[in-house]
Image 1 (tube, rainbow, N blue to C red):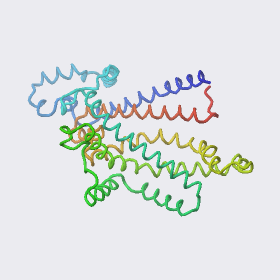
Image 2: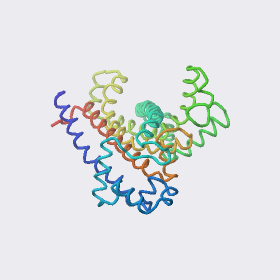
Image 3: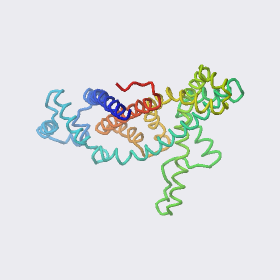
Image 4: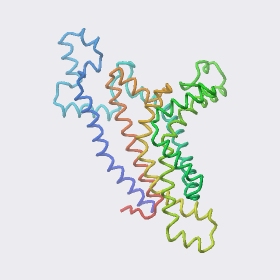
Length: 329
């Protein structure tokens, strides 16, 4: 079985390659078709306007901008495969270095928010299905509708109003306090956790309703299957039936949803990071868009697209492991 699973993973990875090339083509065309001159986007309008026409033509030749569009794409893709995503004119650093510096902050925020939404979604979904029609079930459904229909930026503003302005329990923004650099390691960890709580909760709440709904519907479908009726007829405890038999089958559509949620988490982190001034790639994308730093936008688009492909690949692998009915051949 392990050999077949290895072949399945290898085949899925090969199938992801055309998707990667498709994302790279769209990323290149978005910038190529934009009204901004690539030389201006690379060096800035102030610098280019002071350059002689001969120097501008020389720069275009060095960057391959005088080549046909398909050659420009392949030259850019070649540099990307070598780890060169370009140079940021606003950060004055290579784009890859800027993304690598900002990615840990986004990873911390998204993993924490992801964990909160998954754990609470599973708990609420299982309890809601096990107590179908009860007061808890009705309240959880109402909460799911409210969270699903409320924009994440509005949840963030309401959370800041309640927990920062009214109660004063949590800091309003940033990843650390200004004085944290001169403080002890323990205080630094506590301070970072306090800054993480609010944006992670807001990011998690925006996806909690989806996960809870998927688990609830999957559990209800499983609880009405014939094998569950047989298990109850054999006298098995309700806890065993719910959590050992029904829950495993309810996880199958949920696992797929986890992989598909990665783009939502990344796009949601742009809004959350901007509101809470969190120094991640979401805030980086917002600043790059305001300053027309197209090399950073291209690098971020390709980087996040690759993460989405990788997340979907992991979801396919997890689905195959959990569901024995998946055929590897």
